[in-house]
Image 1 (cartoon, one colour):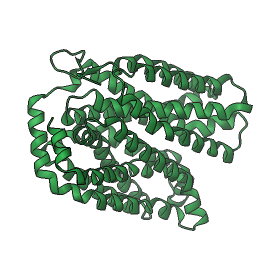
Image 2 (cartoon, rainbow, N blue to C red):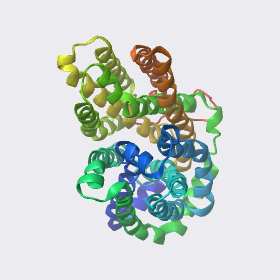
Image 3 (cartoon, rainbow, N blue to C red):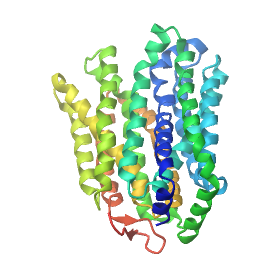
Length: 411
């Protein structure tokens, strides 16, 4: 009820909040997806090993894993809007530092922007839960497609910016500071309502303080987030190499990776809207699993003449999985604070798996000199995603009295 009253009281600010969410979301993947295509240029210019070059991608994921559980407390103590603004300032600083020459600046900047993205990753779902309790699906869809689209664009134009436009890798990475600066400008109006919103949030927290780490339902949401993150980042890291082993050249395999990400886009918006109208999302979990299993089996045993079909199915399955994981933070939480706690827990475990997954898959490939075992691991991960997803998709709230969750009242 308080959420509805607040929305009616300040209708003119709703558009500004949505605009802020869109531009913040657009900054959550671009600093990461812009790095992969430039790794060889970075490695050769700053004279670091392949292992250290790989850490440029791994460091932010580890930062997400270790900082995510702490972020809800920061939002609770200092106010969500203020903490997000500070994070955006740090994000801009981190992007600038990373784009300066030298290995030290590269890693310092990467760590700083990793901290900033971790904060926004955790707190944005709580903003959506608080300000749009009856439109979680549609706003999450906007949030998801903004993040996915910007990430796909960043990975596609990094090399052209660095090579064709003559910006070098420093400029190709540093240019995204413009986008983070725009996000700062879009978020400034939200600081005016900080005091009132913080007080409202504190009252809600007092009414339902739940330790999400002790809830089986929260762990099911967490594992769903973690497994889908691992699958996504494994494919981002290794799909081009998997395709090369099947006789596809480097340029074409790179385009297939972009196509996989583009296939996610429509479903990053559609799935949250559909999920928000369902009392249980189990059917969507089943579709997700079928898509991921079929795409992976296609890579293993399917004809190379229709390999684009398997790539698109993996992309659509990834879009389903990511969107559902974002939706579960709001749908399984009682209020905005609990959504932040659940988001922090799930993203901590999720990005830890995302950081470990590509390294483990790479090790298995080196040990067997084949991509068959790694692909079988992905098949097992898809099955496990179904098992935990069926639990996470139940029509329940995370609750303290009943560890299996308390029923949701309404859809």
